[in-house]
Length: 114
Length: 116
Image (cartoon, each protein chain N blue to C red):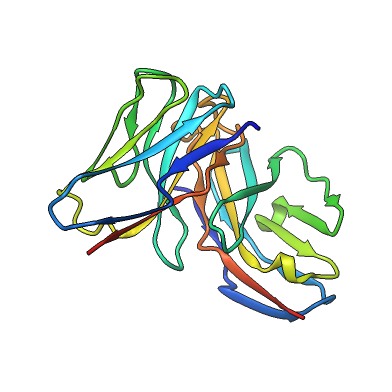
């Protein structure tokens, strides 16, 4: 089945540790995204990638890093510099970066700092 | 700057009632795109509909219908004869042509609770 797979679904991190969230898509989409969702709120864009080997900061990139070495993969690293990392993280993709392309989402990953 | 407002934070209905979710947007773009997504308790955002600014036709898909009115900058969503499975958070989102690529601006979401 075509889709976007995120792992792990639940992740606990100790303060000061870096963690990496995996995102894989088999939709052959060029553009990929990472969004953050805090309880009771909408989504905010962390990073996006228009095409392989390219990525750009979104609205809340501080404390996060990404890579796009393969078209199908867009992992997100939450670094120790992220002051409040506990949140729900959603990976997404679209056929292209052009405005208006429908963005499809994965099932999300819950990150809790303990 | 773009903005999407979903004034209703939570709506509770009894099964088979109709429910309408309001979405009001702000943009300076003449070409833009509006979306609705459903987020069930599992967390995944499910795409429901995409509408461009030049298409003001209302749309119906099964029990779902959408009313797009440019004059009032609104893109409202109605669930007819609601079912328990409709319980979810619903997000309205906007992508403007002038914006940097395919950047979505989301509303705060409306939680719908359908009671049996």
